[in-house]
Length: 133
Image (cartoon, rainbow, N blue to C red; front, side, top):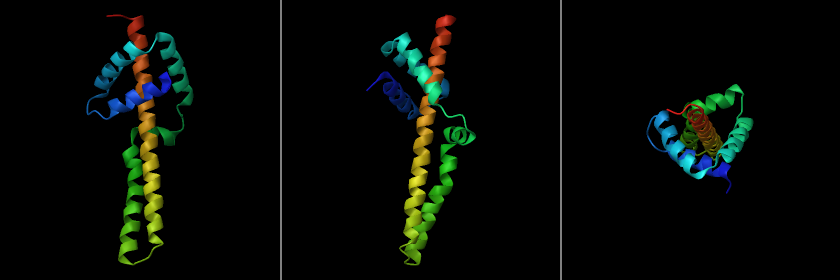
């Protein structure tokens, strides 16, 4: 596992904690500062900036992943309800498709949010190196 993957996993771990973005960046900054050299930090940042999508759909998914996935969870639930109520096996397809799309959107948003957190943390580290307190 390379530094890129490690940093993304560390950011995902921080996303599971209920705290402010500033606190998440602070905790992640300490971890990155101890385990990743400045050269590797710059390489990871360049790679992340190149990979981050710029279209509006992905930006919305990054910031509002649960809101975007909610209609698909509704379709999955409605398909399940109708499939059971009317004994129609074809309605279960809506459950499977809606659930799969909802899970995909949630995972995509989670990954994008973790990448954004790593970028913000690396920028914070660079700023602190340039302007020490």
